[in-house]
Image (tube, rainbow, N blue to C red; front, side):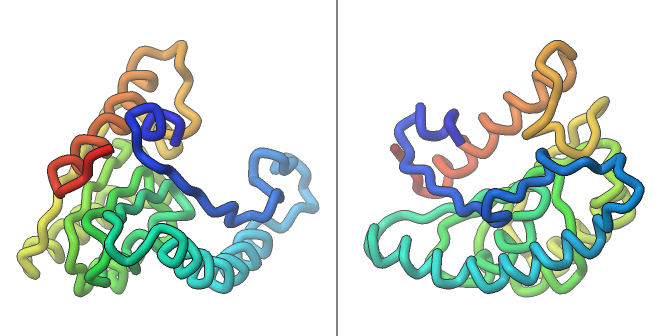
Length: 185
């Protein structure tokens, strides 16, 4: 987010987790029920996102240029808003929780920044998504970053050249994608 703000964009982000980030969890604790935690966060985000979006649109106006980006948890929300007419373009990186429904009927351009190794968006799902986008003549682009895994765009290790490059290139690609579809800082 800082990178895009440094390029002059107004960047806003909703805290889907309301301060209860996965980064603060002890996932090694055998008693922690991760599936229940994520299900509760998804249900809560489904409540938080619509009024937050409306507040942003009210604050910045219906004539503003809107783009959306989602990493991991946020990818389904990007896909939902690409089915509207007011978003100019969207992007996601190492998505999670996507299914075929999310790729049906998108109206706006989509950039997909994917990891070569991704348990949440494996090769078969990525290829199916592309088949669906081709069938509906969607405007899209896919970048698959070799040598990286899920989380590269947020948690990539800057001391590992492939991870650092993938993270930085992904952010630059999103910026260029938005610029191509009418964005300017």
